Image (cartoon, rainbow, N blue to C red; front, top):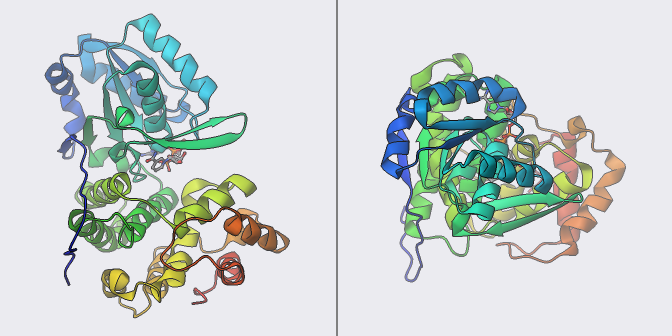
Length: 357
Ligand code: NAD
């Protein structure tokens, strides 16, 4: 297997990554390295206790907390948080949480230029990207801007050890989707492909062990390593069918983010496999099936992932509308986006069947 290409452009962000169980307790050192003295700690309401814990680690460098991070980064929440940061005289943002909290830090950084330290507690991978999705009046828009890339990331496996098993599985498949689609991205580089395969391998090997013992920090560490690699791939290359489908379905039917990714991924890969068999060969090999989508479907089933859009409340009658929406705005994909084939894909994803292709 080779990831050599005759021509490519490779981009990497200048990010400092520290990895290790308990590494969060060294955050004061990171603040000192940045020359920051007034940290604003961000979490969701559900993780507010973590904000207090982090205030303790930051000691005299803690300026305050803001614990209202909200799914899909609503602009009014970001603006309120900016005002809070200004009132406190914050000079650094510390985001402790999943993609929603990281998104809030990015939104504040976009408006203020403040540096960010991201401490992820899910596998979503937003901390490793310069991408920000924001919602205003119910409309989500996404931008890529180096200003929003967190400059420091602390990956602490003790924090993901509390992730409930259901979220562990869906969040991991969400991360794996970035790596899998990264393998056929037009702007992939040898480095992004190497990271994608290693990220998928890390999850394949560690997820079954995490499910057997969810609080085993060493095994959780390998999943977090996978999350870093998969997130970094997302930050470097463009996505295709899988992400567009999830975006369309999520936005039109108000579906949960990670679950939708978990359900669609095997079907999207199966759809594309025939068009780029050599690029998806590493996935076929890792999941031990000539068809990478089917191999991944079997893996997802074994780890107890949700398999059917019907279980998320999508009705069968909605599938025609979903197929129409999915083909409405053309975008690049290794296999052309064909309306009837997309409808077939959606039917299998709705029923939770083995991918149709
Ligand atoms: P999330 O951040 O919305 O978290 C979901 C819930 O789980 C929250 O209540 C949170 O407090 C809780 N939680 C998080 N970690 C926990 C833990 N360790 N233990 C217990 N509870 C925990 O979920 P997410 O899937 O991480 O993020 C989804 C959002 O991130 C979406 O809005 C998505 O669009 C965005 N995202 C953005 C990027 C990007 O590059 N911009 C990448 C991936 C995801």
